[in-house]
Amino acid sequence: MHLKFILVLFLLTSGSLYSQTDTTIWSDMKKVEGENYSFYVPVKWRDLDMSMYGMLHYYEASGLAFPLMHNGANPVIVILCLVKTDEKSLEEAKKDIENGYSKNKDRVFKDNFYFESEEFTLASEHKAYLINTRFFRKSKDLEQSRFDLAVYSEKANQGYMFTISIQYADETYQFEKDFRLKDFARKFFSYFSLN
Image (cartoon, rainbow, N blue to C red; front, top):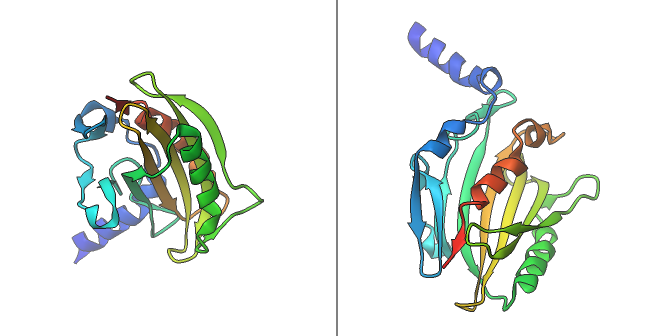
């Protein structure tokens, strides 16, 4: 009984005691390849089949990059996914992602911040866009920092959206700054290539 109490106490406090990004994830990566693309993902991340929801790839990494919990017993949920998009150009893909953020009624945007966009160069030297947003998810009772990479393959005439979503309890969004989530997303997206 005493050992269980100590273990529970450790898990509940580990988020604040060890609140730093696990940089060791970058040292053990595996290559994921599709018909027109490739990227790398940490070996430890859980590969889940979400193809029934239209996802080409879906990884869940809670507790494997950031603390398992934050602000007490609130979970930190980390998801990486890749989907095809229907747009016929990179600019259309970017615009569709930006316009899509406010369409979901489960999202509450704070201080009129909806998104930021910047050009991004893939590992294959193709142009892409990194788009980020943050909002409160009513259904999860968590804040979410979301980073989308808008990609378009001229060769394959195919668009993709590569997403990193990190959900946590922090209405100030200080978690996003403390853990440098945008830099984390940039590093992840730097491994993406078009063939």
